[in-house]
Amino acid sequence: MPESADIILLEGIEIPASLGITAAERKMRRPVLIDLEVERDLEAAGRSDRIGDTVNYKHIFDVVEEVAANQEHRLVEALAQRIVTRLFDAFDLSAVTIAVRKPKPIAGVLDHAGVLIRRER
Image: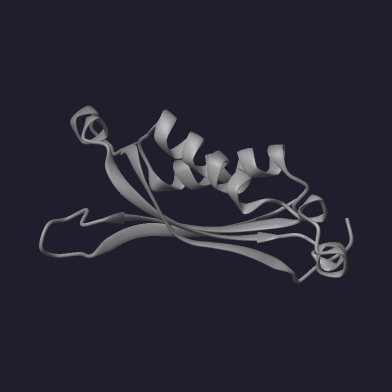
């Protein structure tokens, strides 16, 4: 795949997830906040103005939602890695940067805790 600096952004995704170290925490299904930068050459799409020449962001969202909402995750690191792996499996991407944040992990002390990871194909 040619090197590209083109990025599809999906920011502010909020999905209820089964996430936490304890079974009780995972059972609560609290929302996680996810931001994505999906790298792919977008020149053909820019020239053609056709959805078939890019990755439909709804399809990207569907993969994120399926992984976050339908599996149990102990760590935000695991959730982030699982999403990236599935995105690479589903789409022709050169890299993915993902931020996964867990709101209010420690009540009254911390707004968010999370990770930012980047993976290249």
